Image (cartoon, rainbow, N blue to C red; front, side, top):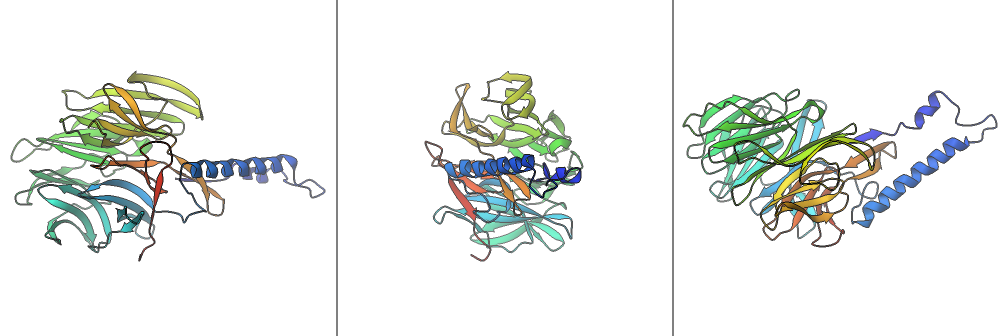
Length: 402
């Protein structure tokens, strides 16, 4: 996200910056000096934990998601194409040996919408080509089309041993794993002006679909897939902005929710495998200035401060791990929160020759089988968290063609 630096510059519209003698107004001079010092400090704070920001590095692609894709960590970025008024998505693989994010080149696609992986099916890829979007499956090193995907700006995919679900902002389609034939389809719930799901999860005969349309709302819906031909009547479980869904090895189902907008902040961790959603922790309030917080409601386990919750991944004890952008990464353990990484994970910096402010916060969380933890930062690449301390390893995007 970026904001034009108009604070202070608006003074030009109604007052002189210079005196009659041509000298710079002292108030304006002091404002410029304080502003410069503030951004130099922000740059130094990021560097202190191992994060480089523009202009010291090239501006990075905007990350929309990150997930395990078999043995790989896949990262999806997005770019709005003004000519077509559509989002174009690119697919990258985290190259841990080289310490970079390299473009995925095995299959040429105009846009890479989403990926998924199961032990039975292997790797799946939603690939836009020309006028159609296809579901591809990798078999013996070759990528084969197995189904057409519904139309939409972005088509998400989730799969298990019985079903594959494809969902855009327009349509939700359920496929049979045995035949890849469509067994049911239904219009996607309209959230906000219409958005693709932010998260999906299959658990036996249930399908959970989450949405987040920012300040325009969100929702978590449950579908029942118990019959041979599911009716796909959605049941609203939570009227919240959904960030992520996860099922633990023990079968517990979790959701993180939240939003921070115009000073208002809310978020929670919810357990979903019971008859009704259970808020393990939830907070709601306003932050007028950094550290100046007024709560409107809190319940469950106490968080270190007012925050939305982002991402979900299994921690070392198979309990849910999630991100609090201003405080770090935490794991639920025996009914309490344990800090896996404590420190701010949102960084601000200047772009466009200092004319605009950019803020890069966390948008995804992945843990690997060997307990490594990665955080996707919206516009600063992927951060590998240290086992101890606060010094992260920043993985940046390789230029195209490398």
